[in-house]
Image (cartoon, helix red, strand yellow):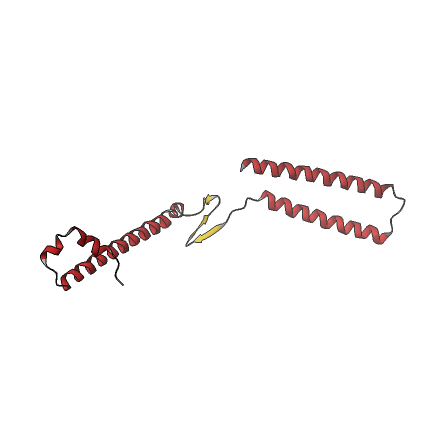
Length: 152
C-alpha cells in the first residue's frame, strides 16, 4: 500500500514537472511574439486563472485524507482513521456492537439446528410409537437403516 502511494506521488511530481515545463515553453513563445490581440490575451488570462483554480482544488483534495464518518448518536466514528479525539469514549469501542450481533446470530443458528434435530428425532419416535411393531423389530440391525431411508 505504501509503495503504491509512493509510486502515485512520484508520478504526480513527474506530471507536475512536465506541465510546468510545457507552461514555461508556451509562456516563452508568447513572450517572443510581437503583439497578441487583446481578445486572445484575455482568453489566455481567463484560461490561466481557471487552470490555477483547478490545480488548487486538486492539491486540496490530494492533501486532505480521505475518511468516512458515521454519526453514532452523540459522537462521530471515523471509519478510516479511527475514532476522532472529540468523540465520547464509548464510541471508541464501536466494534463491540457488531461482535455482539455476530455472536447472537451464531447462537440463533445453533438453536435452530438443535431444534431441527429434536424435531426429526421426535418425528421418528412418533412414527415408531404409532406403528404396531413386534418388540423383536427394535433389536433388528437393519431396523435403524430402515428408519434412515426417506419415505415418499
